[in-house]
Length: 308
Image (cartoon, rainbow, N blue to C red; front, top):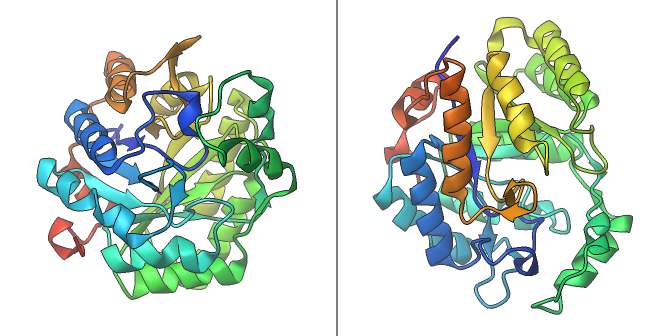
């Protein structure tokens, strides 16, 4: 098996500040936790931004630039910026920061889908900000829009024009076929890095049988031209990451995907999850890839070519 890539998704746009005091929301918190995660073994840092005052997901380039230079100065990890942003943002808003920052990598969601967060409201808590509860409640009528036109726009603007490579986020089986479609059109080139996303309500459930079916389908569609990683949202995070590692795949952890380190115990930072998954993957004989090894594996343009 090749060396294993650990991605850490630092803050995301799903969890709100009231859910954990350890969720990074300020630029300093995001930078500090990202650098610590990299030092713990994460070769790729998947990054979203937050509004400083409220912790609300932000698409503003200034909010990204408040932490990107610090992260670059503090570690050599590959910086992977979201183009998904938040499901309530327009594509223009979602692309504003990546277009300005020109990162080595971006995420790219491979299809439109229901993106339901409202079940989280079933857990009692005290809300810190007025926006949090409506944001979650209104997700019962939320479609995360990623049409073929949207996908092509990201591929051309971020890939063709700015040299970024992609973390192709596939939340369901049909997303793999959409990715094959764009590969057939010549807009996606090998090596292809697929992130299987399991456990979001509206996408495929976080169950082992689904992971094996996703991999078998990707094997058939992409052959030797792809590498896969696994993101399991919520309590199956570590179990399915360990399964991915055993299957020869790569892993993603982080507070974007799961706030906990064990049942009922909040993770105190992102690095804690990186340390845990590193122990698991090294325990089954996988060697963790460095950031420069990942650059070679995925054909990245290099950290000198970014815009921050």
